Length: 184
Length: 252
Image (tube, rainbow over all chains, first blue to last red; front, side, top):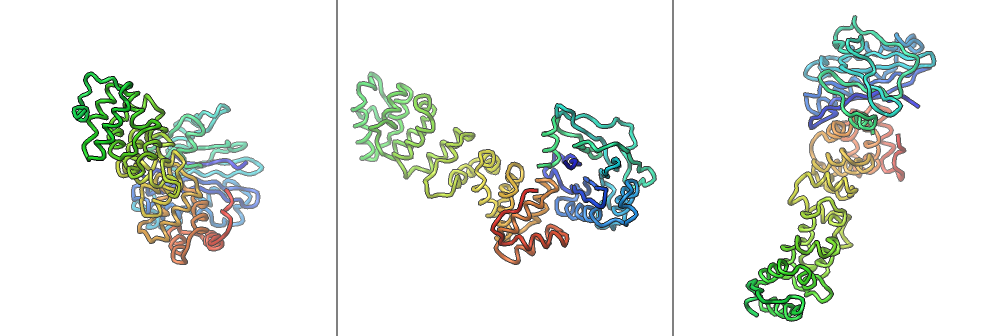
């Protein structure tokens, strides 16, 4: 079963403004992503910005990245960086929060920018923090390309929920968390 | 007996004089005299007798009596099940349907029976919904969705009610939201409706878009859907192919 990679919505009138989520499988590797940006621009501009990033992530990577998790992650970040600033909302993408994961038969890698916390569910379907701050995955500034590390794991958790910078994670249980992430 | 009509029931034993009370009430109705003071006084003095008089087997089919009875519903509901009471009022005075439905919804906004008090020929829940909206505004949409009255809320969304769309996004299903989106686009209502839905529902709106494409009536609506959704070429093809399809899009 494909893992669920998602990001918490906000409690405002447009909880998922600027949110995007998807996955694409290439060769042996699958790239998963979830993120948000430009929420303060209102739903219309935020949606356009989100679609621009979503389409960049879904575009075909170079063949050299198809079998190499770190390369595929680097390619994904580069694809987002290549989206023109004017298409990324009024803050030109500075408010981007993005969780990326690459999974394959040899393991998985996770990277993030603009993410404050990550949550997984335990056997009782209660949410817990996956990593504790300070951690290389948490609080990475969007534009600090050199600081973008990746956490390698044997396999991705079945569910990995991200709280964007400035947004608290919501929900104590898995079902509450998924709903708060717009996973229906 | 004229003093009874002013609400003075001193010395009256309602249960033994029920026939007489019925006669007085009937005559007052024929003569156009107010009956509310008598009904109110009786409800306080003997709610059982009052319930028998206004909703029992021999109750008068008089609109003015039902209007008066609605004013003392709090005394009557402990005597008769509320759903039966309001349905009986509808039977006795069909012309007072709007008042009866409004009273039922105001007193029992969470009850399914109150939302479905309707004449059989009307769309499901639509009349009750319209009545509730006049008093409760957009919060009524959320209640209606919670009660499963999707069709009525989708109808209002298709009529351009943004609050109805929001309620469906919060608690509805992709198929219903897709139908509401199609209605919105076909009616030519303004606004970035796809972006709104994404901002309420969450980022994965493809099933909603596909269902909307299936139900959309005009080419211009489909084009607007494609433009507003920033559809990729693959999604454009899917949306175009889905239009007019007999079967709903498969679950994803």
